[in-house]
Image (cartoon, rainbow, N blue to C red):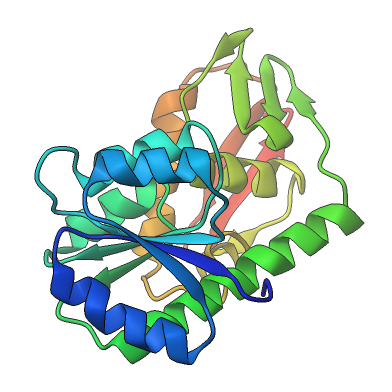
Length: 236
């Protein structure tokens, strides 16, 4: 976890800023406040932050829109804060590229705990990447460039979220190996992820749709191993 990590709080509720600031101060986290989405984007462009706490429901630019805008440019860790707790909203937030999702009302102590968990995971992933350099993978018409978060099929770019790219790369870099849902959650979302295994199923479904996995004669496929999990099969 970065020493003296700097947090950006983006929420239109001043009470949220006040309560979180007290706890972040106690943990020696540096922090700044943005009160709408555009202000948050301007601050991210001007300063370095290690993580952003982002309210989903804001007037003007929503948290989802801010998350998408950030993900087009960087992998800044994002924890969504929202009053909406339905499963579809949580999954949508994660699919947009959020690293975690906390439903209001929340305990500031829990938020700090989640911040530490996401920063630990981010730091561990960065260390692993240095030890095991990411390489471009090619299977027939499929090309995955993990460092650029780029996926191409037949030379055409496929719009994938960061999590979708990471999931595809995990499977494709271990062809034939079966990963169960818990292993995928641990590898991609981190062992501190607070969601459930259906998140994996949702991401696999979206990947198959985007990559047209129902086409025949490809040099690869994403296979369901019923009762276990998923595997990437080369030469399918």
